[in-house]
Image 1 (spheres, rainbow, N blue to C red):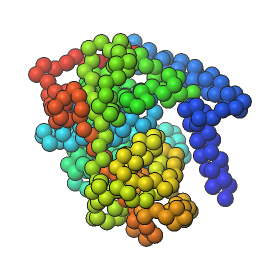
Image 2 (image 1 turned 90 degrees about the vertical axis):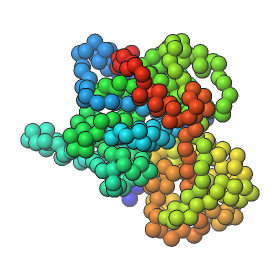
Image 3 (image 1 turned 135 degrees about the vertical axis):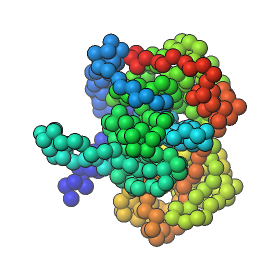
Length: 401
């Protein structure tokens, strides 16, 4: 009972904090809280800058593993559409004959108990190997143990190894030794400095590139905008196809001459949860829908549905990576019945957190998205070829900033 109460209070605080960061809240309380977050962001910035300085001056050392390491990440927290890019990139590398492993930290996956970590430290016992989400043949863990994105990647990428461990150096060494991998893709690895990437692919959400310009926790930046210079390539995601001269000028000012590849997330089809049934996108036109999601930027998901002709009679937004409970389903389907919804639709990332064997009162689908290159390459395969199989090897970028 107490745990449930604390969870609700923490969720409420997190939602309130997000509203303050995004400017959705007004009043004295929001102003004071925003000022407090501003002070914390100075401390966060100082810590981040110190860390980069230590790596740049070789006081702390990165560790090469002797194979191609491709880092995919962003300057901001959440919302850039990173997972479909990682998926498409890993698939293209696999199809070109590479033995690929995706290394993830498994954000919000079930972690090792603290007492076990203390025991390993006290006894000098060897820590267990990384969690193997997929050995390339089978998916071995569920989303709770693996994390949402690693599970989704494992499910969609047969032939690709997916490992979860906060220590990506250890995970990379394990992928090479255990599975014979020659290519490592660091999912959300732009701030992971211990393992040096030969290529740093930086994703920038074109609809909200750098938030309000502040670092965490006052804003959404993990590191300063000037660290665009650490990118080998910049991917502009969620593009509508129109040029943004101001954003492009910002990128070129901090990283002159960097290649910019512009892409969009395109809906493919609707997949019914727990069934083989697929519906074409045209099926949505005029249909009454309840949309729900627990992602960083629900607005883009909801816009997809509206643009496809769906009538959103209700919408529910949860925290990013939210774990749905039985009472959440009861509330969602009760709302759907009250509003006369014909079906419920969620995101693919949310779908991995939903039980497939549950009996749902109404049809429940998730929207499948894929990446399409709009500018900077004829198609994604060409982009992969140009980036990972150049005629002459580019010099590696330095970690510091």
